[in-house]
Length: 501
Image (tube, one colour):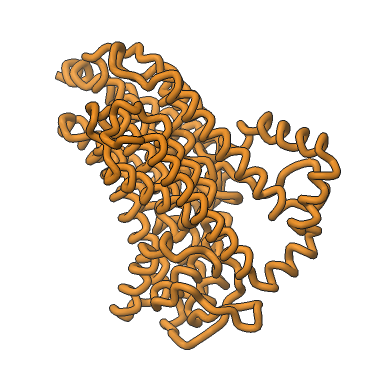
């Protein structure tokens, strides 16, 4: 009986065995602590892993998008509770900006060019940043909506990407919940928004569903989705734009009109309003076969939309740079950072600048590897996810149906060019705005900035060697791999934070 069950569910048995072996190695790797409840923690996460695995075994016919949403919601919910208070990159600043948005203060005004208005609870939570709730001082404080001031860090960011978090904070205020619930519900609504975007990203793509599913289940994707960071919304809209592009690319002839082009432009704006480098995605219009358009002059129409978004990009850049607070300017000056002087350095030392950009390209793996890591700084762990890049590599090169319609060489070159431009522009912007003048290495660039680009590489390089009858098994493989790495990464986060903070 047992042998028959193992044979019938061989895929699950193999991965569950790998999971248990991995847990054993991770426990051995971790430093011991007398207060650390490893057995109970491991049992809890193992039960979560088993429950999700069982769901996939007995609901194998469920659409991919529903499966991905299930994983994203389950692990995201655990993450938003277990992750330390405001312990995600720049979450202190993003939480304050979300709170301002919850009061419909979409464009906060500066106070003496150094602060903007918030509430006292935001400042109370900020004092406990990077701490677990169990050992925080916020546990003993009541909700305090009295006016307060916070440093002007994220004030100039556009409010759209903060709407989900703001909704959660508003609900917590309306229900008069304790202070910690402002952060928890802010994270939860951000997670729900990310799940919504993930569902539709996968659903509308006629092909490459497994690619978008896998990117949405990357450790850093889930980690960001379960926080108050706007990156989840920004990356979500960028992935949605790529998915909609795939839909337009494989549509029938004479079916793409101005309505479809406008929708693609709006999705691009959703990503670009908060991170202008993603405005480049509108150039995807130029790679769609002209026979698909029902417009008389598709190229001219596409160029017109691209021009409009380029102007909007300049307006946003102008608005953002003109509203930077003096406290940030003073901080940058103390670090020797000044974009005007940096640009002058580039013009005076073109060879050095070329060397700097080539070095950034050469070191790309060091940056992007952080996408496969669950957690941040003190509580990240590369042991738990060190093999995830190899799984992604197999997806990039091997997955896909043989004989199915593929993107043309022109479209692939266009996609690679767009990805390369986004990479270069991001590095350039960080060099002139966040790097000491004259430095020979770019500071502040993080792999999470390039999350959507991880969906582009498989679109370009997949060769399609998987048989039609094995597609479902292949997706099960990648799903189970994601479950293993997410469970391990989340467990390590819990083990680290329960002892370090």
